[in-house]
View (tube, rainbow, N blue to C red):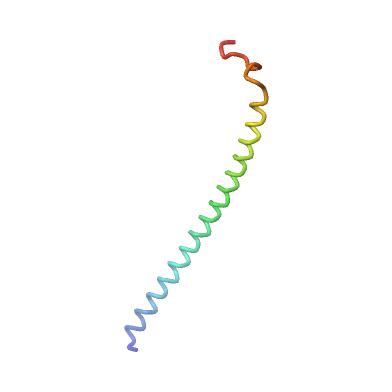
Length: 68
């Protein structure tokens, strides 16, 4: 293989390695965000379930009309 061709291939490999590193960082950051959002969704779902249980325990007859 001639020298210029080898230098070109090495240069392309260096750029590809750098790109791969950047993409790996992006994927890791996105996974962290996904994990945080999943946790938030679970917490919100739990809150909603508990809120539904506590808010609607009475009967409609027990509620005060809005004009009072």
